[in-house]
Length: 630
Image (cartoon, rainbow, N blue to C red; front, top):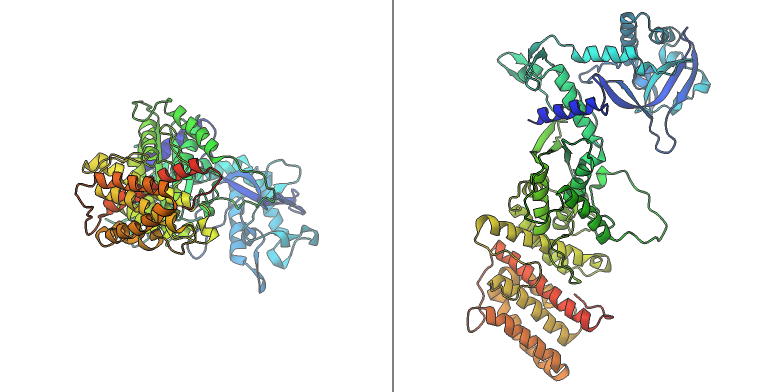
């Protein structure tokens, strides 16, 4: 189904003239050797952009796959090893006569097939004069500026076309692409066609080209005497189309997202509406831009951005969120959460990774209608929607939870970790749960539980910056974990966005109680405490409450005694709040279990967060100019 979907994408794009035709690909040509019809050298023309040092892009004959001890030459364009016959290193210039002779032989064979092509003949005559580094080009050619990775070609003086853009070159490449000694019924088209022995290369971002989606080792991979492409009958044409389609998707930032070693490509059947792809990328993977606490996508997937010296204020992330959500809702027909809608346009998501052996592995494949996929993404946003620290609640416009932020927050203490260290299985399982509408992985839930004590213990100014947002995200993830399990397994109650004063779950109440006990300590001792009960006891209180909570309640009695003398009004309010929580515990004296399960630890964290936010909102209302220590 994957190859069929890519084949259909190529055919649709081809009809719109928006993808490379048969036997062609886009290449950045950096240098052009201009020659006369007699083959004499005129000049070396530089096509590279001085800003990014990249060549000018042209449609050229597709490259032959290079493998083995002596990779083949490209007849119409290549690098300096093949065209000029040398390479440079720290040890000096060395000759590459094998590659040089291979290129001369290739262009000579093409010239014989197209005897009327003047440019092909002129290139052959050029090599009668030029014999590699032994007979260098004139000094004013400045060949020392030609780098190993630069692509080169030729041009006949007075012509507007390059050697690599000649119609004869395209014709030769198309015929060679379709050539095969084996015929069979293609698994993709269903027609009897020439079968591809090997398949074109896939250009994975930040990886050397040379890998394929379909490949067989030779001679180790043989079945019933069949070798290489004979093991899977894919025609030469279908092989070109699915490869070109995938390369097209991988080259477009709007249809690709990378995180660690995983690369996701996605597209929809409505090619005239690219906003569907863009919105899906932003909502599912990218999240809120201009967040000062996290990067929003894989740093390895983006071009490096120069730091601006301007102190211009960054755009408001909230406004950006609303703009994206408006696009998201427009695609969903402006329907609210839970409202039925039907969009039969197809949407595809393909997850790939590059193995150490330079082989592509398919890690994920999902096909469904736009309504199915977008409903599941919206449900993901709703599940992780929780009250913010400032008390903001918006059920219709949930915040965008970046996949990068989710994984980086639960993976490391650092606020800007390297995505290469992320667990591939964790990323993969999160994406699968979002797009399939299933419960989030237990590894994500466990990682959040482990990270929260680390976040709460952060002391330095660098770590404190944005720690509330990281704590907010961890708790939002845990809320989502509980609510998804509640819908599927029915043994849990779904959590509200804000404080639920009727929730009598013992773990939720324990979290609320712990937050109040912390507030009592801070009110009694002030902000100069080196280590609060949060710093010392949060981890044990959320896992082994019976060992800790009794001691903390006893300790709070001493703090309340002090508050009754110094701040009697506050002491009364806190005692009243304690009484409300104790009243929901089904026992005369508060008792707690010996241990909390993973779900109960999650409920503890959400209860603690809900109570903290409720307290914070009240203190901000009472003292709007005084920042409360949380």
